[in-house]
Image (cartoon, rainbow, N blue to C red):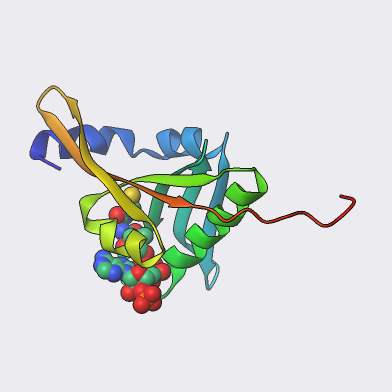
Length: 131
Ligand SMILES: CC(C)(COP(=O)(O)OP(=O)(O)OC[C@H]1O[C@@H](n2cnc3c(N)ncnc32)[C@H](O)[C@@H]1OP(=O)(O)O)[C@@H](O)C(=O)NCCC(=O)NCCS
């Protein structure tokens, strides 16, 4: 992310903007000791807004959120779960079974947001007979 992108993103990451994205979609929070330490949501088969408080990284919170989003995606009949990953998070998603599809970028004026398109085919879970 370049400086122009950083400045643009600061305006988007307000409480109201986040709430507007979380509310209409399947969204999760991870609590530790009563405090929210991680969030993530599922929007049309795409993982969005996955974030864990930095001091709580590498404790399994990100995995737990993605696993729960995956389960919800399966329940909703999603065959391939997708994410547009920040370049720094590609290794995390690979650990969770996602594969790299292609690098891409979203450009608005001088602002450049680079990301990596990734996906994970979801095994179909058969529903119990008669249901
Ligand atoms: C990416 C992020 C959500 C990971 O959350 P986390 O709670 O630290 O991840 P976990 O502890 O559940 O890690 C799961 C696995 O991924 C590995 N992993 C996590 N972050 C990693 C990284 N940056 N590089 C390599 N491996 C990583 C862990 O070691 C663990 O491996 P294991 O299978 O050997 O146990 C977190 O770093 C974050 O919020 N980053 C900033 C926001 C962001 O980039 N979000 C994604 C936007 S697309």
